[in-house]
Amino acid sequence: MKNLNDSYHSYYNSFFSHIYVEKSVINHPRTKQLMEKFPEAEIIEIDHYKDVFCRSRQYTAGQHRAQQLILAAKKNNFIYEGAPVCQSFGNDYFYYTSCMMNCVFDCEYCYLKGMYPSGNVVIFVNLEDFFAQVEKILEKHEVYLCVSYDTDLMAVENIAGYTEEWVDFAKRHSGLKIEIRTKSANKSFISRIDAAENVIYAFTLSPQPVIESFEHRTAPLKSRLECAALAISRKMKVRLAFDPMIYCKDWREAYREMFEQVCESIDFDSLLDVSVGTFRVSAEYLKKMKKQEPYSPAVQFPFENDSGFYHYPRELMLEMENEMVSLLKQKIPENKIFLWEN
Image 1 (spheres, rainbow, N blue to C red):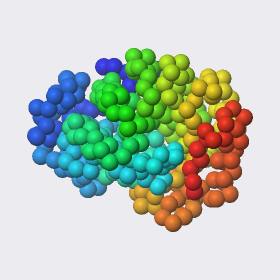
Image 2 (image 1 turned 90 degrees about the vertical axis):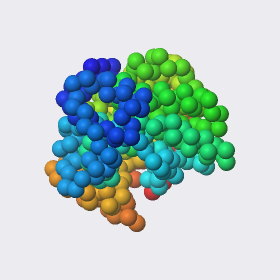
Image 3 (image 1 turned 30 degrees about the horizontal axis):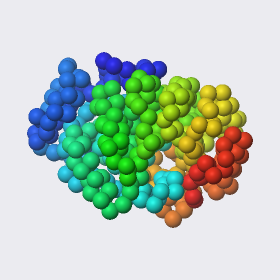
């Protein structure tokens, strides 16, 4: 079995021991390709992915630690308008898409644990229908599309190949700009894919103590930076996302040490831009997250409710964001720093 990424241990050997497949897609070429990756998995045919994914009383946090795979066809709602807690980076027509539900990483503070009723992974095999919907929107206006917000496509590139398919699709459509966000370090993918003017690779960065405490199974900071540096060297458009910033003991020292590591690895002059934002989540999601992660300091923090969204107390939130922006101003023009509007 191939590794999750080049520099981080693969957890797939203990995952996906069962694959649930909608009967309607059992013969789809992508279904067959995905099942071939797991020859020892038990294949279970189902009528609809929600029969498994939306069962009541699931313990999503536990399922994240031993995930099963569901292969399905998405029937509608292929493209969504950008959410208010996400940054549009100045783009007028901001959208996102979810051709995969859930993530193979296990970040304690991930809003997916409040968004989905299951910790298992759904991959929609009818990617061609997602492409067709984007083409319809492109007939009206240009599109800025985040293809990896509700998951991490690069983390499963070695089994699904969806990142490459999105890149190839973007290359054929000049009015389209896509962002691929990741906490992985898939250097083999970056090494073999050619740069494209309308493809942005966004690497989410956190201090190593935050990664070790809360971002389980993600690539270490050093590996993410190596992958980002490789992408820059190959003339790719690279964004660094210091978002979400997570409060921890000695947070200021932790983020300063992280910034020093970034400076040692990254040519800031070659970056497209950077984003900054502290943790924020909808009230509905946080309520469910607290039940799923009852012992996580990152989730059980006494957040403030602001018009239906929770974030750190305003004074702390501004202190953390201003600290990060102040550091970044030493290396990159202010007009390349995108701060989440709160």
